[in-house]
Structure formats: structure tokens, C-alpha cells
Length: 207
Image (cartoon, rainbow, N blue to C red; front, side, top):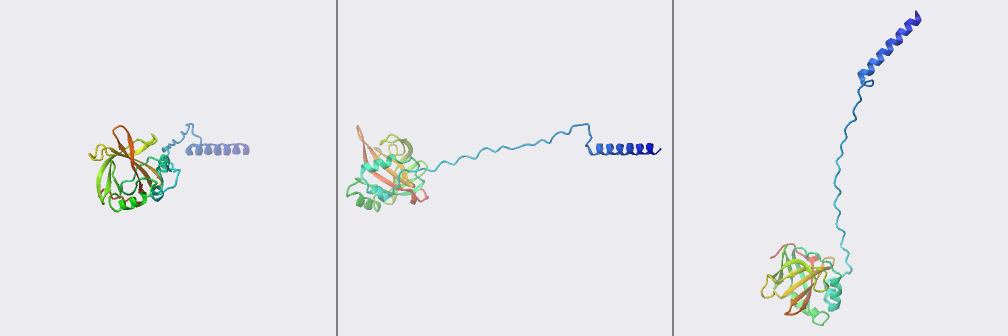
């Protein structure tokens, strides 16, 4: 009798345990589907353009005192970057390397030519403290070394100056060296050189 009672107790305990497992889902015949996980893949962050490395460290004062062969070499090391919009002071480099360069630059800065106003597609010379002769801004091939350059062309914007064309490159951070070419009948000549100091640019647009 004791054996039968013990076996009966075990049977009741086993039945109760199985019933509890089914209630909790651990002994279910049905497979539990795994949870669906979703992941959002973000596009890679755009790479920032590498900083421009200039071959030289020059300023308008140094450029003003160079001869033309030195200016050409500096220009060849430049980068064809756009001049910031606004008014950028400039310096004329008349007859590079001569005794006239410095006094002429100082005289013109306070009278005939002070720099350039830049908009998105036009350039205006500042003469006698006023915006005057304009040129179209574009990119083109340098008439000095054949490389890419920023161009200010007067051909379609000025009847008097239509034979002139400026080409400009950044030669040091914020410093631009420009060469004004003159279209002759059968050739092209260099009329003058100039520098622009974009470190002093006033973003006020054309006035």
C-alpha cells in the first residue's frame, strides 16, 4: 500500500508539473518565431575637401617688390580659387621690379584704383572710390602657362576695355595675384600686374 501511495503521489506531482510548463509555454509544441530586428544603415558622411597647400608664403608687400620673372613663378604656383564676394582691396604692380612700382601703387591706391567688387558672376573695378568698369567672371585657360585660372573678361562688358582680360590665382591664403592681358591685333601682351588681399574683404557687395 505504501508503494502504491508513493507511486500515486509521484504521478500527481509529474502531471502538475507538466500542466504548469504548458501554461508557461515552455513545453509548447509550437516553435516560437524569433523577434524581427531591423537596422537603418546611414549613408557615409561626406568627406571634407582637403585644405589647400600653397607652395609659397607671400603678401601684397612682397609681390609689389618682385620683378616680372618672379611674379610669373609665383603665379604658376597659385591655385584657381574664386575671390570671395564683396569688396577686396587691391594693389597695382606697375612695371614690376622698377623704381616706379612702389610709388605708383601708393599713388593709385588713394586715387585711381583701389581694388575690385565681386558678385556671383560680375567683377567691378573700384576706381576713384566708385564701382566702374565691369568684367564677366569665369574660368579659363591661363595665357601664361596654359593651366586653369580664374578669369575676369571685359570683352562683352566694356567697349573701352574689351581688349583686356584679367587672370587671377590664389598664391597664399587670402592673397591673389592677377595679370592683366591686352589683346593686340596679332598677339597678346601683359599690360600690368596686381594683387588682391581677400583677408580684408568686406562682404557688403557692390556699392
